[in-house]
Image (cartoon, rainbow, N blue to C red; front, side, top):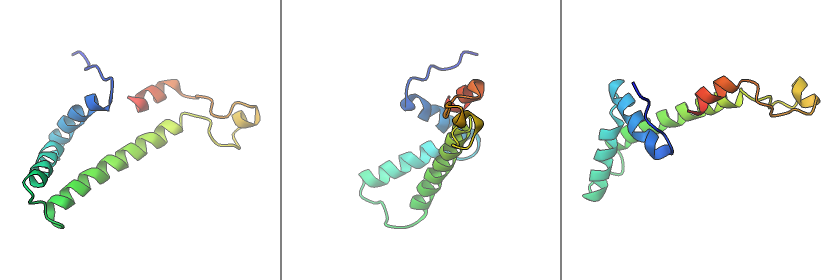
Length: 103
């Protein structure tokens, strides 16, 4: 099976929405419901839709934060690492894992 070409974040959103849907969390439907409510002027100040959107956003932020931390751990970023003392702070230690985390 050929992997889809990903050139930007716009290419990732549909793939992530499909993955979310398979996991039982339909972010595409939530986004469509939010857009429709805004367009029709019926978006409530509080309630279920805002909670669903907030939950989806929090899930994305948690996942992104986790991936960023894992990517950072591919570097010798701590100033007390041996690499830093040797003038090699921020040296990429694990290129294969960096590839995985960045894609």
